[in-house]
Structures are given as C-alpha cells and as structure tokens.
Image 1 (cartoon, rainbow, N blue to C red):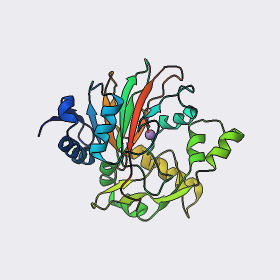
Image 2: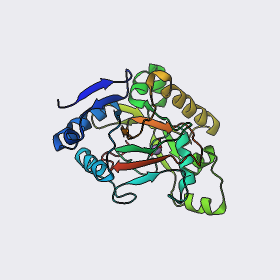
Image 3: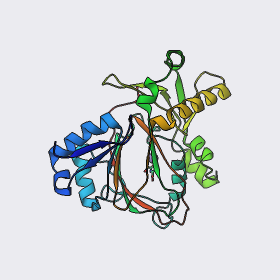
Image 4: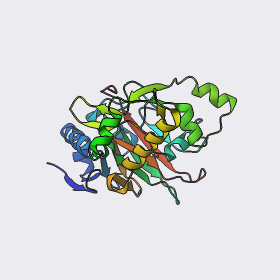
Length: 270
Ligand code: OGA
Ligand code: MN
C-alpha cells in the first residue's frame, strides 16, 4: 500500500500517513474507502488541503453531494457565515447525519480551518462494534423495534429555541421511523440511534426513550470511542452509516471553522 496506517483505538479510528500527491490518486481513494468502512474513521494530520483538493479526494471515495459552495459546506456557529448556524448546536449531542432521509449520507470529510481554543474535539463511537458487544438478551429485545426520528426533538434536546420561525422550518422535515438495528447489505449490523431518536414505535413513550438512552450510553462508552484533538489542517473522514459522532461544545464566538464535503448515501436504512 502506498500509505502507512496506524490504528488509534481497538475498534475505531486509524491514522493514515500519506503525501498529498499520493493521496489524490484514484487508487488511493479506493483503498481509503475500504479502510474507512473497516475502521469507521480516518485521520489525516496536518494535510492543509485546499477546497479543490478536498472535493477531488472526496470524488475518488464516493459521489460528492451538492452542498454548500462547490461541494464545501462551512461548519461554523458564526451566523455571518451560515444563517442556520444555531442548528449546529445539535452536533454537540451524539448523532448520525441524515436520519430524516431514507438513504442517509455515506460519509463526510471534515477539515479544520480554524480551531477553537476551548472544546471543539470531535468524537466518534463505533455502532457496529457496540451492537456486536450487546448481550444476546438485548439483541433479541431490540430486534425488529423501530424508533421515531424527529428534528424537532433533537433541536429541543440541543437547547435550540423553538421560535415560531424555527418551528415552521423544522416542520418541513417530517419524522421518520427506522429500525434500531440496521442490517447492512454486507451482512454487518449497526445501531441507528442518536439525539434525533425520539422514542420507540408502539412502546410506552418513556420506556422507549429510556431504551434509546441506554443504547446511546452503551455505544458511547470509552472503549468504542475515538476522540480527535484537532491540530490545524487535519482532515477527518467518517463512515456515517456505522459511527455516531458529536463535537465537544465550543464558544459561539470561537471562530471555529471546518470545511465539510459529504458523500451521497448508497444504502437505505433497512
Ligand atoms: C458535522 C458534524 C462535527 C464537528 O459536520 O456533521 O457533526 O466537529 N461536525 O464540527
Ligand atoms: Mn454531524
């Protein structure tokens, strides 16, 4: 292989060491994709890629989603840069991206352009490994159960104010139900949970909420988690279909700026 791989924890996160020229070759993209699906998160330190290079790399790994400007969406709490910045407070809680779609996004590439002095660490929890390690009793209990995913619930849990304007915007994204256990085409199973998972369909509401909370706590135990301490120019890639993620809260005025390129989903929840 034309790059060096160093596993960062047992279940998730591998650092990839590679030069920029090598990184941008099509065959490197293919190899990274395979590693990404195996390891959940790839970490490339201090790459300092330009937006064009980031989008080029993304296109070698999958199909770039039309988001932001020329495939680059600015992840920042700065309202001058992103009018919906306050919704990003939802990312302070454990979540998956795109549970309001039937086919969630496959993966995202996130590069650190300006870091926060405080907070801002991005964390990932491997929900394939967490599912695998559940007791047989719990696996039987959750098999076939479906959770309701709600934007309104995730925003309320994140403390975003339910102003009339916000409620109108949120109501345009209808609730969706997905099985708690996602049986992927490749035979692997992961958990579909996060702050957006409101309750369990057909189950007492509080009991369902408690079950989801229990599964989130299980999945986000330190043994399934990789925490990324950013250094300038780092690039992270995560497989959204098999890891939950969150960012440690950072001040609204920290200036933190990340550039994200997202890859279209390829597999529906099932
Ligand atoms: C995201 C996200 C985390 C971060 O872009 O989907 O959750 O560290 N970002 O900014
Ligand atoms: Mn996210």
